[in-house]
Length: 343
Length: 140
Image (cartoon, rainbow over all chains, first blue to last red; front, side):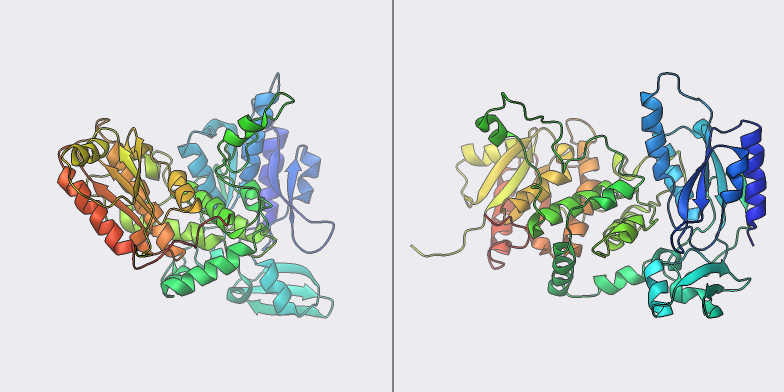
């Protein structure tokens, strides 16, 4: 069992010693049940830190922002940033290290093992409670969550309200850490691609129908891109911000510019956008499920990335986010890579 | 004249092998279907998946990526990278429900004009019964 006091103690220590400039963690929201990200700069604020099943966010995205902010500063504070990570988030750090986007000495990782459970899915919880408002969700010693509502406490089996990704998690243990809370517990997991295989087993036309229906909903808010720790390109191919339109830009010039993807949220354009995202995340996505969580239209985006994860595993025996020294999936090859599809 | 459906195929041919192969087919006066729009790229490894998605987006009925045989790449290993990347793209396109025949890859060397014509003939034959590709096409 992870005790939040231990995390607070360590956070206080490293802040007091000036080892880190601030700590990214979770704190209680002022509105509702779910936690919110917290940036803790002074030892007094450490009391705000929490750890409970509502700590769903992948905070490594803030390391991307931190790097950008630091690049703009004249005299940047060179001390590392403390960050609270779960098993899945730690793999995101591994990928960022692997791509040399961040340096190991710039982060201080407070790893938390999810042990036998994980984090909850807010939508599942709302459904479960039938409109009642949960005030607190806690871990039980066993595989249950204890939910406190106005009516009192109730026990719910963890499997019923756990996030989808947690049900298919194969490494609930931080791969990288400077200090670890909780224990390494092996989870029983028969098939990490179970939910994906449900879609794969559909016929070709059914699959098309499914994805057309889903991606038609996309409003291209790019929330999935904004929340993704791997989507850190300075310029994304879907917005053409590098082509400034000035008073001198002629209509002809504008017409000749390459427009890979139109901005309009139509089927064809949405598909290109989501294809590009899936391919760019192939071998990099660590299945933190954030894209799916933030999607306002409830598109099951995780499956696209999961599919790429599965193919990487099956075709190339590649697992993302375990070894910072391995070359990335598409920048390496083996002689025995499959080529039965090539004429 | 029959109103038979004639597919439009976008072929990304690498400059050193496949493009030369198609050239050989041309100068040798070999006959093959005229459904192909060849685009010469420097290497099959330089074909970004975005080119492929974009081709489908702009109305291609089929896309072919063709490069040198393994070991023959002018840049030594470009086609190995391509092989990996294209495999992923192919799986992704199949996953969302596009007909797998519409996207293919081939190895064609500069001496294989004959093979090039065969690849195109087979490709056209396979996607003709499928009809026009409307799934990913932009509505104009």
